[in-house]
Length: 261
Image (tube, rainbow, N blue to C red):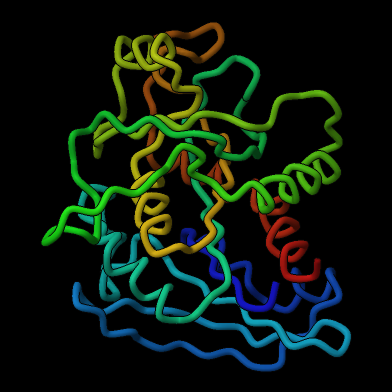
């Protein structure tokens, strides 16, 4: 892949030094930070010009919760339209999203990294670029299968997994509160296997503008009521974020493997 965008948090960007690239045989030629003006607002991007053998590659990074230099924007306030518009006009070949999720399925424990296979969005919030004229976009298969196959192979290798399931259905929660134990029980019964507050809105918009999109799922915590031995355990935002940042090694392996394939 020549030009790839990655959507993630600050922890991922902080790792973007020469080491993850050099370990994969990528040389950093130049970096640049710039703002993209969109019809929905300004979006800050950071780009890495890379060289792999004789080929030049570009990695464009978008911090999902960017907030004009202030504390991270809460999930329900993210302007996904601005973000995806900026990436589309950066002329990337595909988008890889990195998501911290609560683990609902018993076979996806915290600490593992998986892949989004489907999503369920019952929030009732409309996410579309087509507000003026009716246009209906098929999302039967919402994620790019070529990317998912490559990601699954990479994750199995880097995490030493064989037959374990790695593809899961993402349940979109409105937030910003974490879910109740009763809500997680309902999510489980309705087919949600991980829960988060952002990703499907990106996936919908990428499908509308025909940008191939895939999402890595970092299991950061058991969802409410699912903590083994303590179904009443509270969730803490700082500890959830810290656990997600500890699992960025497999994520970087996926990023660099897509760039070098």
